[in-house]
Image (tube, rainbow, N blue to C red; front, side, top):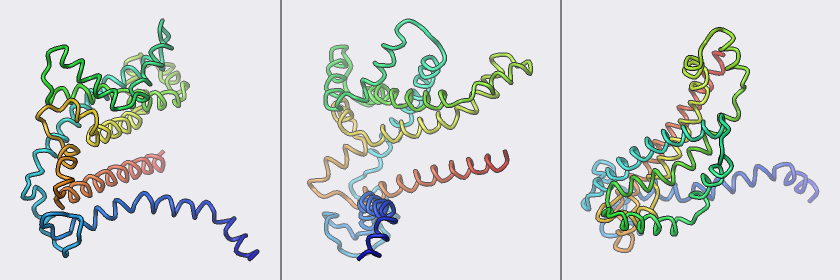
Length: 265
């Protein structure tokens, strides 16, 4: 018994880690397995192994237009939020101005506000301004709530920079533009890339705000929700697994590039 207690005490963190990762990856494992299910009307019951879902990812219910909308909205929202959020992050991190504390507080409001309230408020605003809900209202809404996450991520990266590197560049007769282009921007680039990936994942995955402001536009999360009761096609699992694998490839590629830079440095 004492040996077991010692072993348990030494490996407690490992046990928690295994349980935590198991809990996180069980849904992903389920999604992966059922992407090979021989789908008929419902993907809740295993009916046999098949590759046809992967060879025909659009499927009989034509899921690809919804996926295309989510990708286009995600890319547009990510571009807009990353550009605006990066500029705001630099302004808050590097400059002092009146209302700076207030702006810092306001940046956190979209993150702290329940999405239900945020989605309903945005819909009210669009209708009062005379906009019909649709593709572009979704893009604007996604840019709005993604900016906060970009600002927080990029600002943290800027705060971690060593100011002596920029001072050294200026001591070597580099002007402000050259210092920013050759020193500051490359150092902040990993934070900007991480913020962009976060913004895209938030946009692609969003349902509540999109549901309020979508009009007749169907995105992938809306497609999954509307078809869940009637029987979600196995192709939805194929797309989910594909997006997960793509995210893993991007993360591993970033880790590989980062480790290469450390070795070369």
